[in-house]
Every structure is written in structure tokens, then in C-alpha cells.
Image (tube, rainbow, N blue to C red; front, side, top):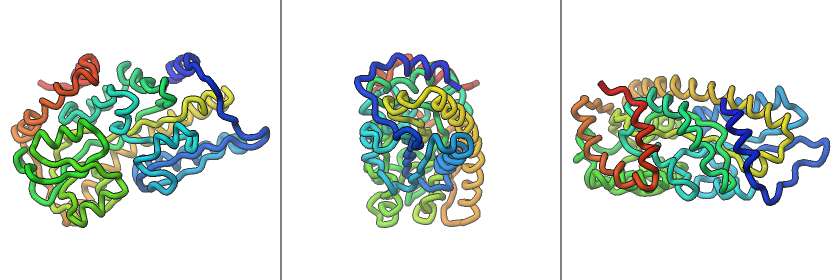
Length: 332
């Protein structure tokens, strides 16, 4: 999709050294690690990437997929990529604060009206620039993978912003998400995704935020009696690689890999939309959680309460980035 942009940026990289590839005749090994289950959109995307590479580049490239933090966990995956211990990751967009502040735009609460607005933004030039924003740090963005909009869950019904006061919420390691929950007088607790279920089950935290597919894949609905259909934020991923590793792959092979990534990205994003809808219905059918609907006025009350977070991060993210994101909404 963005091949011309990718090629231009990769050629512009000043590489001090290049990792040694496999010996002549041996396949290039790509270790693709992630922290979720195989039956999530990301998990399915990783397996589809492996399948297509084996079909089209068999003998040249070998892909090894490591799901559910079996190779590397949330806290260590980016350093593992920089050390070339893994070659492909798809971390959530909340994970990149250390390398660029601009991607924090995706964490701003109630910034996007709906999933279609997110799609529009990710197809615009600003988002394409954000894919390349960490190249100087050795991290190169290849594509955006959708996972869906986040819903609030808790041990009590969250109808109004004040209902969250006093509760502890598991969050990713994001300063924006930290500020988001503090805005409603709740306590954010940073925990790896793999520890979220146990933290909810034990009562260490009382709530969290996730798309429907993550809630179901980790059985969070069995320990969260209330889920508010808030659609308040984005939990999407960026497929990334080690810049030096990627540029060291022979051009012809790399071009084929980029074509496969484009194909897989389209499939992942389509699957994410369908899976989230199916998993929402599964939660309803399970009857373990009560779904809380928000009226337009109630949703606006949440948005108003959290909008000061936008202003507090404007200097870090860039007012131009936030404006570009706002323009994709279609409010009447």
C-alpha cells in the first residue's frame, strides 16, 4: 500500500552496520512474536503471514510465530526487536512513547467518533508519516493492523463518568491512558496484557478497557460483571520490524514480503471488524456480563470529562496531528 513511501524512507536510513543474514542457501528466519492468542485478529494475521510466505517464498524465508508472550512479553518485546532477537512485532500503538510522542494521538479518549473515522485517518498522509516516525531509532513501521475500539469494563456499572471514581483500572504502559483514568478520579495500574485476567480475577484491579475480541479471548467477561459499550478509544497495532534487518533483505525478497504484508493487512482489518461483532454477541449470549448502553448525552458527558487530556498532550503529539485526526470525524 505504501511501497513507494517505504522504499524512500528505507533508502534514506543511514545504517552504521547491517546484521548478518543466513548463510548462503539457508532461508532468512523471521521471528514474529506477539502477546495475544492465535484466534485474535493479530494472531490470525501472524499465521496468515507465515502461510503466505511459506507458499510464495518457501526456501528463501522461514517465519516462526510465537503467540501469547511465549518468546517475549509486553515489557521486553521492543528491546528484543532492536537487538534483532525478533524481527516482526505488532505492538499496540500505546507502546511507542519512548520513541515518538506523536503516536499518542491514538490513545486520546473519545477523539474518534467511530471505527470508520479511525480507518479514514489511517489512510491519510499524516498516518503514513507516523509509520515512519521511529526509523531513526531503528524501528520501522510497515502497516496498521486493526483490533477495534475499546470498551470499559468493571465490577460496577459505568453509566456516568463519576461511576468510575475510586476504581482501579488495568492499563497499558501509556501516559495518556494514565491521564485518561485520572480524569475520572480512577486509579490506573500498568500491567502486561498477560497479567490482566489474573489481576481482574483476584480483585487487584476492578476494571480495564479492551476491544470485544480481547475481552473474549482472555475470558475477561467472566470476571467483569459490567461492560460499557463506550467505544472511547483505539486499540490498534503497528506492524514493525528492525530497520537494519529489513534493509538487509535482498530487494526482490523484501518487495515480495511487502506485498504479502499489504494482503495480510487487508485481511486482518476485515477480520477484526467481523470478529469484534461476533465476540460482542458471544458476550451477550454468555450472560456473564451486563452490557451498558450510553445515550448520546451520556457519551458526551464522558467525552467532556476526558477532553482536557487532549490539551495536556497537545505539545507532545503536535496540534497538527490532533487536528488531522479530528477532521476525519463526520459530526453534524
